[in-house]
Length: 481
Image: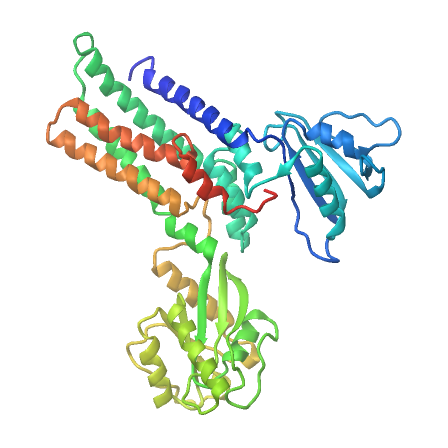
């Protein structure tokens, strides 16, 4: 490789220029403020109002009175009172946290008013901040400023949103890994490798007479390695989607086969009403669980049958819709009654979905066992009323997940849909470059496809990003983040 990589230096300079331009676009409107904690009536002991920008410290000095000889310096917590600057009316007793640039989340001056929780205190403090020079932050604007100021890259910013919205410990761990740069690091390495190859090729175009001939085999080998690494990271897309959105599981079956008992045993609660009367469940009952690190939304549906009861009819129709929209269907039957015509009818409605047959009430079943269609491959036996068979059910669900080549545990990185789309673009560009080499086209054609890969990889971490992409990403954030 060349001892001095002009392409890498030029790329880094362009990235800094682009960040500076975007920072001017987004940050020229000055100091921002927002409530950074959930606001719930009569709930929460602490409410935080966050302020970031050039006027953050002056706003704090206007509103906050710190008695005694407390020192106003960075990364110090002050105790005192928030007062209206004109009337001197006391608003709240609070703490003030000061973080001077660049040692803050946004790399700007940041202050936080730690008020009493609830609604009134934080809303009054926010209003005072807005009246004294700040404006209300847009969704995700604090994190956007952290990105524009070089505090975070785009994968880390997205990991923050994933961490806030994590629905299982594994999802939180994966998001935390992304925040620590475990996705950004390999992406940057791949992009740097592409830039190295690009520098080799461009050098031959500009200084052909002064350099030895280009080793095509080395170039092809390097492109194949980069492409394989891109494919390996791309394969985590399904894992990431599963951890973020979870698995929707519908328990379906005819009335009184123990669907509600199964939900209650599984969730270890009394979410659903259980009686001996058929048709007790009239609507879809939901429960949120975690199975093998995967968030699972379990839907206990009304028994599917023909009925003249108008309310039950609505419940049955909702059950059918829930089953058709579920990622996995648990078709539940009663071990005491064997396979019935009603079971067959329901099976024909859901057999196109991923399915596990749950044979419930095995503690009351006959010794001969239960007959069922041979086309059903996944069967679990339970006695929900006795809390038996739940572990086997969870194991069967994870087996179904793994059969789809989606692993649930030990994920160091898991890309989202935006990142997957960029990786697909990068892989396509690398494949087009390989075809260009095979066709023995001029070196200029090689660089076109290689630049496409560089740009696509840069979109993931933010080296190559547009204003519209940033708007789309950060609009998903809460206002205080």
